[in-house]
Amino acid sequence: MKDLFMARSKLTDKEWVDLIREFYKFLQKDLRIGQSYFNALAIVKPDLANEIQGTEDDCFYDDNKVIKFIRRLNE
View (cartoon, rainbow, N blue to C red):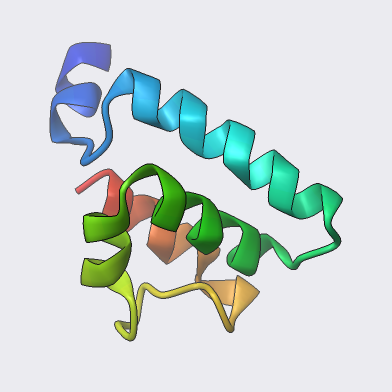
């Protein structure tokens, strides 16, 4: 089951680790969760961040969209 889940992810295992590391750095700067996730993605995988920016899955301005954002990364 894990292999099936990971096969659908738009991020590699290394990119997920990097995303969480960058996310944490932004949280330490007192950014909101949505801003932190989006900024981290923009560093780790800028093309994917550009694809998500401005869509209903863009959590930068709305923390309520974080779950949709994460789901988008795991399509």
